[in-house]
Image: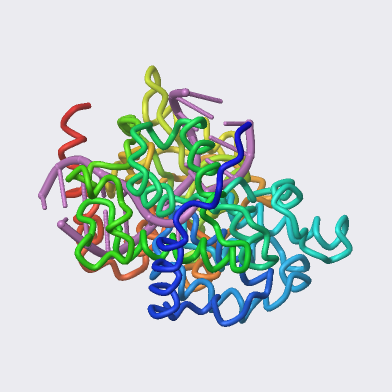
Length: 379
DNA sequence: GATACGTGGCT
DNA sequence: TAGCCAAGTAT
């Protein structure tokens, strides 16, 4: 393979100067503690920075060290993650903390390669931690960086292609300064977050416009190229509300794998195409150990995910025969108690609706109904 | 390579 | 407003 020389020291200096003169006040940049870097990078995956900020602060208060995290229960971890989404991130981080303690003598691995062996740490996060916390010279290619680089060099391939990312990585390696690799990565990402914006790049204030090939061509906003995203699937879903005396509602913990994994909910099933709502709910409750009768629909709401839309129909269910609540994935919970359980957005909405007195039952979900109304008509 | 996996803010 | 998509990873 041909060796490339370091490209464009002028451009590197311009971007580094811009970075140094535009410091962003982010909580996790107060130091380069590897644990802080790690947690912030995991939280930031597919998530906006303002959303991360409060979660990061709460997290560090509750789990100040790797040991504190490793010793916490998964339920506590998920509770702190509630609302951030992509809950596998929290479970993986929790497990990885344990692994670092057990198999790495409590030391977070230093290298790009080693970091990738940890659950939840992929290509990007390994590069980010290795460069930011340990000074390794490895380009961190997140969405921002991919956008900046693809415009800078006018890469016409889709970002989902492995070849495109390998190409960018190789080129990025030739411009990355050896002295401050972490700062370079942050500079590129910051530029993408604040200047080189997805739709409307602010080229007039960009410190490296003069080096930008896509700007020279006249339309940087069309890059980077993406694969067309697949339409979310629409799924009818039934939710059963089983109430014992004294405001005690049956809740269950969802399987740790899959959608909203490990979170608590009012028992919920997707209705299979050839099944009725009643059959679906009855067999779900049978599986949980309850023989029930299904009441009328009392509430309807729509929950949109990135890949899926739940059309949720909420029913009271009534106990016909004896029950067995011995499963530890089941719990009888009253309204004040359920605020301690980690729940996803859809079930938090149902909880809000259910919380007595529900003066205006419909008002809560109007936002989501409107949001997905157009899609619902296609079903 | 394609799909599963959340949530909310912006244009 | 409806669609886009944000500091990605696992399978």
